Image (cartoon, rainbow, N blue to C red):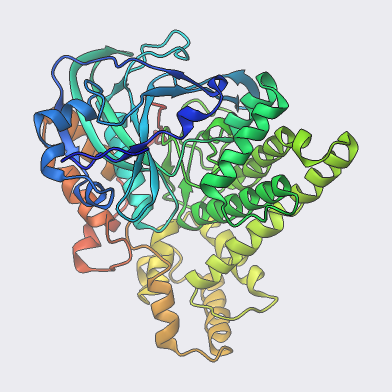
Length: 488
């Protein structure tokens, strides 16, 4: 059953029809004086929403969590998760699922308010969020979308008019997040730990119906679900690695079954290439370092496989064997995606056995000589190697000759290779210093122009235009490492 009105709300609430163990119906936590900071007009239009109505008092009231949109059914989702390897009960402690918007094209998207106040799962927190981290998620998630990486998206950020207490008092805000769903590995962990087998089966069937309709009903559909989730995560993490994205907090509750990037907390993009790069202030052991991300994804998927054991086979040993066989193929899938992406970044269309060595040799040099990851591939793309820290280095020049010889062994023209590289190597990423510059202007000075200009540049990462030049520059040298925080 769906509902429509002049704003374009067209909600269904299929998640609310799951067994009650999976959620808690939630009253709104109104805020004092909401003010719309930014609205993603193109995204709103694609969802079938009227931009002008969203900008009205009534629309802002919905985005602030002061009013339930027509057809909405607010709830907080229950889930669990391994946080830095330790299992715990979690849930939406500061988020509210308004419902599922059905677009004019018939697609279904969760609309969730993040920072909307306390819920049953808040665990002592205030359920609120600060303006800076919500704007940060807006910037990074929209940049990821422009880069072609599956991701949740940001519809709006509303300032609440209320201060929240952290290390100091900060302006509060609410982000409206759009996702194919918020079903996580942690949702299945919760069902396996505290639900019945039938409740677990209901969740799995719901997930298949929502995200994996092509799964054959006649086979072992739960094995197929596991295989499809493995496939999507292998592709997703490869895309992260190819652009130097570091998620920062790859807990199992932050892995979406849909294959989207979700929960932008202490995330950042790598400047100098180093597999050990960590930005998160809480990741003191480097568990979620850039180079570890593919392996952590495999670990998380193994936890997902464990939850499905009762559905995979009635015999425990056979179920474990089925799960192990499926998980064992993950790393090969990841490597295949990653190497295909690296070939594209180097303008290579066909496959040769030595390609992996060619790529690894370049990355090793980049690490050895502290070369910038994005700008090195950009320099190769636009044929300006003199602007990289590798220029003039004998080791690099020898590699460059091997690379040119490799390009010469394929039938595709140099023009085709350059086009492939331009479409595979972003000229701009959300550089950490540029993001901080935009957030500082917005939060501390009330100036949104810096962020708006940054968002415009990031919306066309593969343009390689002259207007992007200033956003390719590196931050000034600093003795202090860049650090990000969860923003809770």
